[in-house]
Amino acid sequence: MNQTICDAIRNRRVLQFTYAGHPRIVEPHAYGLKKRTLKEVFRCYQTGGTFRSGKVPGWTLMEVDKIEFLIMTNEHFEGMRPKYSKGDKDKSTIFCEL
Image (cartoon, rainbow, N blue to C red; front, side, top):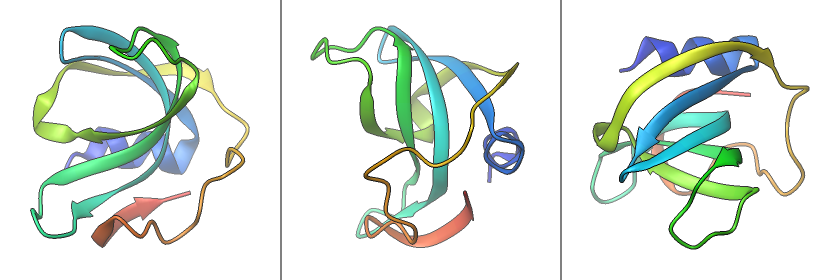
């Protein structure tokens, strides 16, 4: 389990990292194991950086093993974004969540 992601969720801190070659700035909402694959993933709202579809801001599900250069910033976010459903249905196990 990645403690930095859980700390960011608990403290409502923005994360910054590289994913699939793209810089990302996100507000993490839930972190756990994905159903069927049991890969570590986290649901987040991307507020900055780039995305292959070009749709920022928006919701995304990130695979933790594809993250590089993870940094918890000093920037805080207010809380749950609209359209987030507590108890994320894509996860079999939730390690931490807003």
